[in-house]
Length: 335
Image (cartoon, rainbow, N blue to C red; front, top):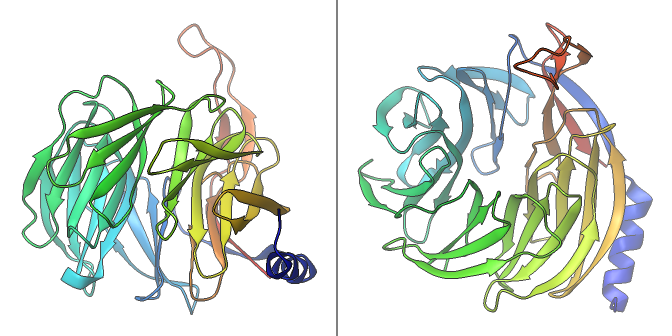
């Protein structure tokens, strides 16, 4: 049930209306993955092929790049130690760079094909989900040394989130489960099934209430009680989800789905176990990942125009649609 205060918030949000404010072009062609907004540092990190393009959030302009990797996926920012961490499939590394100069400091070999990557300020560790090796790696952010790895997880690792209280949550995409892991030794504490959540993908967490938000490729947002594993809420979303973020100050969950026409779904946390859809914002096909600037409330989504797919072959019977050269850019969605 909505409280009176929650109803007022929803009315104000609906009156403002989110929409695409601008589209910022970025030079070069190629794929992209998980972008990261450093709200305090006022930078936006955009993985793009074999490099990470760095934008100034206030000027909306490119200010530099971090190079030296292949097939980059995500970026974790550890401002308290002045370092950034990039996961890349080359075949599996985390590139450490200086936040001020963007110079590469070190390259650490982790498991194959690291995808999701986060920094936990509580433990001062960086965690990478190494899906090719079906494991997770913990790196000491200050020293750059590997301090722990999981045993064989027997499934496809995907997104992860830390609760700031000694635990890391990890989606097992092909198994449809959520793992609760000890952040110190990476031992699995709980394995929870996610009924109704096909291919759990994107993830974030409400640390104050220990609620884990998961975007499911089957077309739903599920909210899990991080203490009990109970699913407390489920809402429909669009196809092709690959990222979500929670704004604790406003109680908003942003979910990007790049399938179909592309939609950014926005939900409000009415209470720890009750959620309401604020609106669905039209973006563009393929705008599946996103980052939130917690200072301005602006949401950023990388995208490129798409043309027709190549002809099917025996090796690739369902080829993806081709990207139009020179159209890679970042959408800015705000009120």
